[in-house]
Length: 207
Ligand code: PRP
Ligand code: URA
Image 1 (cartoon, rainbow, N blue to C red):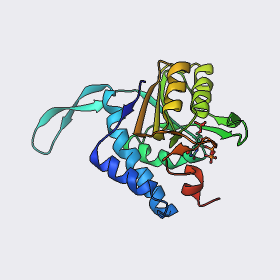
Image 2 (cartoon, helix red, strand yellow; image 1 turned 120 degrees about the vertical axis):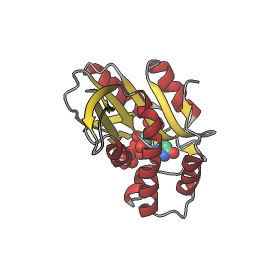
Image 3 (tube, rainbow, N blue to C red; image 1 turned 90 degrees about the vertical axis):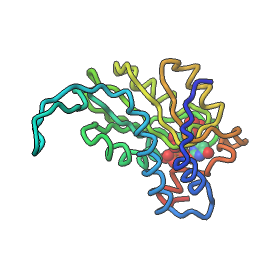
Image 4 (cartoon, protein in one colour; image 1 turned 60 degrees about the horizontal axis):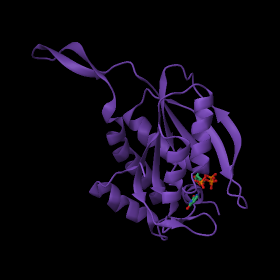
């Protein structure tokens, strides 16, 4: 199974707070943004740098800046929205696309209802969605981007089931997956166990 579990103590602590059933929407949203920032720090480690001549108040010097890499963040609606701001805090120049998918409660198959993307030419993308359960939604979102010509895609999730990781590995072996937690399994309704429940409902206070 190809997946990078981000086991930094701050991430692990915050995931535990998010899992607790008594954690309310405001805390849940804030924790998700904080964890996304912590994960984003690591996920962006391979961004290319270039030298730039600058002057400090004391002397001229050479600094580093991120060289013209075009980045896109794509949340899978709805729950992925909760991870956008955390990445934008780190990469304010990134463009944001949206892919609307919901899981049919009977078949667990993803149903597409929205897609709006920035210019994909030479742009690398990070797809964000807190939950990777059967992997159907993530796999469909990746296929959608690839069909538009996107070549470099990373998938960033909060909690994954092994079944979801295996599905994305099989369908898209070129896509690197980053998660904060790899859980045990799925239950008969396709929910991650132990998981954290329905991420969209917990973010937006719906039921
Ligand atoms: C959730 C979650 C993922 C999907 C994961 O979305 O945010 O997109 O389920 O399940 P899968 O790996 O089995 O496809 P949901 O369909 O509940 O929609 P929502 O975000 O609008 O609540
Ligand atoms: N979607 C969720 O929000 N939670 C799960 O456990 C599985 C899919």
